[in-house]
Amino acid sequence: MFCLRWFKSPCNADDKPPIREGPMMDMPDLVMRKIVADIDLLSILRLRRVCHAFRNFIDDMKLDYGINHIIVDISPFMIRVTLYKLSAYFVFRYFDMDVVNNCLLQSIKTDDGVVQYLSTMNKNCRLKPTADDVYDSLEKILKSRDHPIHIQNMTVAAFTSQRFLSVARCIDMKKLINFEATSFNKELTLDGIVELNDWECIPNLKFMNSPQFFEYYTIFYNHLADEDELHIALGHSDNSTATKQLKKPLSSSGIHSESLEFSEKLQKSLRSFRSHLTLQEASGSSRSH
Amino acid sequence: MSVEPEVPIVQVEEVRENPVLYKIISSDNHVFTISEHAVKLSKTLWDLITNLGLTAENALDNPIPVENVNGKNMETIVQFCERHKYDEEEPEYTNYIREFVLPEWDRQLLSIDNEELFQLILATNYLDIQKLMDYCCRVIGDMAKDKTPEELRIIYGIPTDAEDDALERSASDSPGPSG
Image (cartoon, rainbow over all chains, first blue to last red; front, side):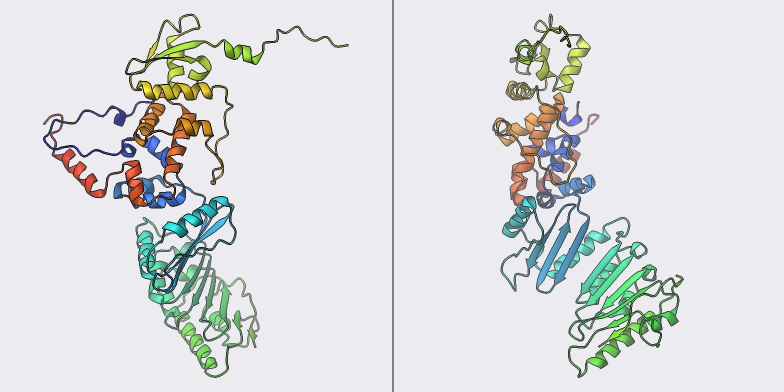
């Protein structure tokens, strides 16, 4: 098969010394694709950082590495990315340099190839030095897409609502089936979540508050029809089908007011809820210890 | 009592020892002899041979010139084809974690300078030898393991963004065919 690049015409006899392109860039497109398809994932990620042209080439290829599940954990002291593949999953864990001057990896279920990935990452790589950088990168990647990303199940444990919301705005809420949010900080309120477009289309929502105040507090509901149903769900009714779970606070003093405060916030936020979904089933049970 | 059919038994080794041979001339006028089974690994060459109607009788009298491949690469290619001419077809990779391991003989054969390896890939691509292409790409892919972006840039000869911009500028500054 002939290729244009194969028959490069000789350079014009200019005075400028020609900058020599590397052998990789001399390859015909099909050959380049074959070479890149044979390179392992982590090397591809590093290759993307070599130059813009190569990054664009790799991105255009849309390689499929069989990764079907990604979890990104970002906290002030740790950044962890878990990539799930067809037969195994592996975890890259990064600690902030200020806290631990090293990378630590943890693999729960692994095989030889994954161990190799992990050791490589442990030795040479860090995603980004700080959680903010990771958030920025993640947001940038998501915003660079032509369409909001389609996700079926989303679990978020956030410290700040601002960061969470900026990423959440890049997600197509209409495609989301299960959503679970946990706040580790009182700053994260549901007020922000209801600002997201089409958030009311999510069939299954689950909110968990900070474990600092209670062991956990879960509101789980399916296909709520109107605000009345929400009140039931929030425990403002004696209806036994209310879908509320409230576990025992860690201590008695002051905790109850916190839980009420949280419920008030939740109620206030959900008042703007205008769902056209029909009530199908209100599942769950109410527990209070 | 069954009677065995009288079919002449031809040992496989005998067939292997009496192959049809073809002559190939590289771009630098080196002449190589390659067996029929081996040359079949190259789709380009085999198509040429069948289209030209070369037979066992006239094959050696009609050497095939290959202008795009030099003697060094052609030598490697002939060695490879002769080595793998009786290989069975391998199934395509179906899983994402590739289990394929490059045989030691082939790794030795392909332990050459990066520049030469890329030239060999171009030659392999031209001659359309799928198996050799797979092996070369695997070697290239293995080079990337445990390397930093800067090391990758050097190994693969990828220009930096600045160099790339300079290349583009020089290309746009240079007069076109009509200029």
